[in-house]
Image 1 (cartoon, rainbow, N blue to C red):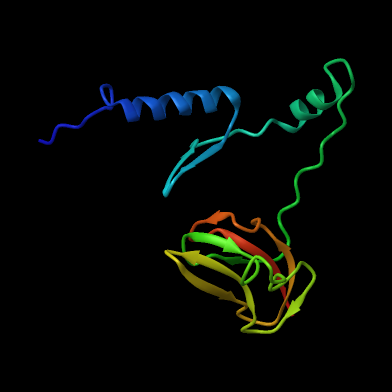
Image 2 (image 1 turned 90 degrees about the vertical axis):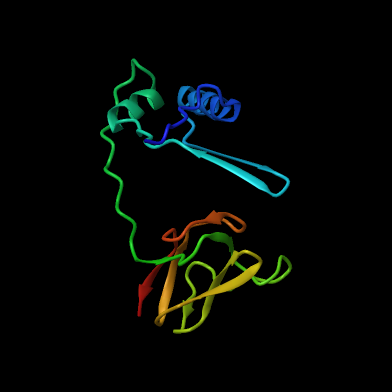
Length: 155
C-alpha cells in the first residue's frame, strides 16, 4: 500500500495551509498570486453569504430595525459559457474596440470575445441571433471551462 504524505513536513503545504487559514479568518473566498510565469490560486471550498436579516442588521446597525431583504433574482438570459480554460478578452487587441457591448444585437456566427489558451486566441462566437444582456467577466480575467461569459436573449 502506498504511503501518503500528509504535508506535515512539507513547507509548501504548510505555507498553503497557513494562507488558507488566514483567508478563512478574513472571509476571503479566493486568492490568486502571480509570480513570473507561475500562478497559485487558492479557493475556499465553501463561502457562506450572510443571511438577509443579518446583512440588513449589519448595514443599519444593531439598534436599527432591519428592512426585509428581497430575495436575489436569478440571472435573466441564456448563458454563453467558455469551452476552455484561458484568459477572457473583449477585443482583438488592447487598442481595438470590444467585439460586443451589453445591449448589442448580434447575428449567428458573430465573434463575442476571445479566450486565450496557451498563446492561442480562440474566438467565442454567437450560436444564434441574440441580444447581449450582460458581460460577466472583466477584460483580462482568467476563466475556466464552463464559466458563464455572457447572458444573452435569443431573438
